[in-house]
Length: 129
Image (cartoon, rainbow, N blue to C red):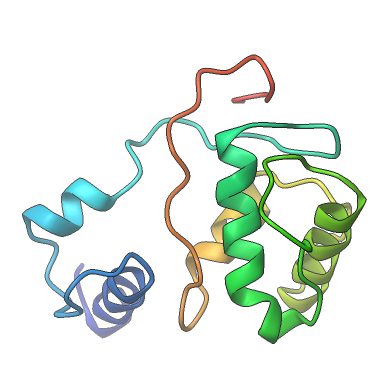
C-alpha cells in the first residue's frame, strides 16, 4: 500500500538524490533508485568508488553524528571507520565499523538523507554479498 509513510519516504529519497520532491515514483525517481543488486559490505581496508560514495554520505551527514571521515579519498581507513561507528551509534544499530545491509538501510531512512546511491561495483575490493 502506498500511503503517507511511503510517500514521505519517497520524498526523503528524492531530496537526498537531488530530484524534485513530489512523492511520485516517476521515471527520474525510478532511474535514480539502486538497481536492486546487493549493497557492498565495506570495512577498513576497502578502496574504490564505492568507498568514495560512502565517504560522501558520511561527510554530508557528519553534522548529525559529529564525526566526519576527514576527506573523500576512496580509502576506508581509521577516520572513515570512526565516522561509520559514530553514524551507527547515532542510528541505534550495532556499532562495529562495518558497513553492511543494516548501515546502508539506516542511511536510506534519514529524515533528510545525505546520500546518493553508491555506484554499481564490480571491483574485487569489496564483498558484494
